[in-house]
Image (cartoon, rainbow, N blue to C red; front, side, top):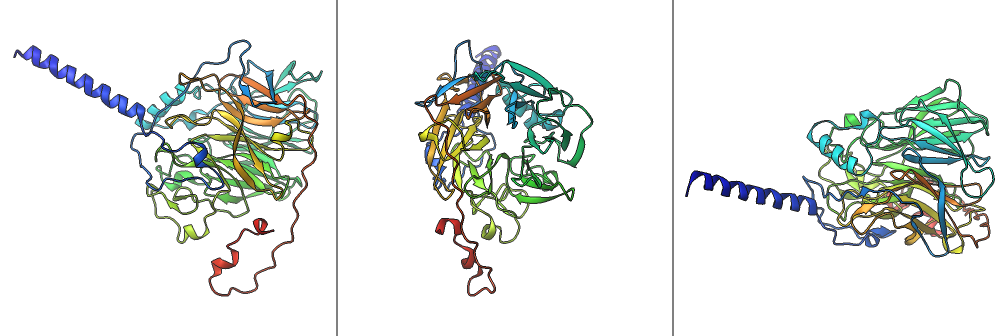
Amino acid sequence: MSPKRKILIALVVLIVALLAFAAWVWRGDVATLSVDEVSGVKPVLKEDADTQTIPTVRVAKPIGWTEGQAPKAAEGLRVIRFAEKLDHPRTMLTLPNGDVLVAETAAPPSANQGGFVGWVAGILMGRAGATVESADTIMLLRDADGDGVAEARFPLRKDLSSPSGMAWHDGRLYVANHDALLAFDYKLGETTLAGTPTKLMDLPGGGNHWMRNIVVSPDGKAIYIAVGSSSNVGENGLEAEEGRAMIWEYDLAAKRQRMFASGLRNPNGLAWSPWTGELWTTVNERDMIGSDLVPDYLTNVPIGAQYGWPWVYWRNKVDRRAPEPSPEFLTEYARKPEYALGPHVAALGLVFSQEGDRMGEKFANGAFIARHGSWNRNPPSGYDVVFVSFDARGNPQGKPVPVLTGFLTDGGKTHGRPTWVAWDKTGALLVSDDTAGVIWRVWNPDAKPAAKIAPHKVKSLPPQRELIGNPAAAFKQDYIREQ
């Protein structure tokens, strides 16, 4: 056999081997459980976590919506475009006068990882439509005639730095850039956000999870700030995670902050329970242990709660990849999330049912959640808006119910990615679609305005004066579930 023929055969073998390897990488780990099975108050959690060196890759390329196209609304609901041609709209805030603020934003340059992993991540996120340049703008949308379409828009402020969280209280608009919490004087109805803001606190900048959602406490005394981790499981060292993977509390009167809850890999949506007054959040859990693990979740957040990241998940499931020994007795006090939302769904925006909403009886008394969609599950998960029912005591129940679907195509592409949810002034649900640049409006045309949810009031537990026997047993039961 001639040398040229040998070289040609070797090249053919090499190409076939590379193609086989690429096919194996592209296929990745295939889910053996449905998204619903890994959802709810008692999700099925695989015991044999498969640690991956190369992640499963299933990135849906955004193709947008053509004229007249729209997501599919659940039976009885209608969906229209509230606003379109926006520049990567992510978070939203409806002001008391009905104006809707939208953060046109994306990751700051500092959020990009370096090295080979960063290069690969950049390619994947670029395919998913997530690496656009940030417009750094808060846009005001106004539906003055009440027809359900915003006929006027005003760029309120254009010199921010990857803004996301927004909240208004008592004449001040609070905005969270990726690296700082700011306060602006703002009168309702104004179409510009002028003046120099007051910096309330610095925030850890950039990182893998750069969004910083905020919410004001019901009494107006504090602001809560969600800050995600800079990594998957602390692989860059815990020094890089200082001030991250937690919810901060900022005291407006004392002008100081404290850690409110920790061990939350990437908290996003923040909302107050109308039943109990508790703070609730949506959290994106860790990657690269297979398509079935770990489910993102919805949970209440008591002060001082620890949810285990990066060492454990779901209270006592140990993740051996965490770079440093875990705190002693962590599995004894780590808190189990209340409700699983499915693996890799990327749960983001969150609102609870409220007085006056027009979603109908089927979607009364619960939470609406935008699931942005997976990039590393086979088959993909998320790419929808779901409803989670709550009982009269303020506890989640059942499985997630689809509200808005049809974002993902049969060919593995996506028209858009649902990102955030908010109520408009009429009680319709607004849904931001970042890659498509659209704000969708969803409501039940036949529904009457919802009644106010009755708060669930219970007596407080008596203080523990002494510990008898096993101390853990004294606090084992969740008090509100026993009432």
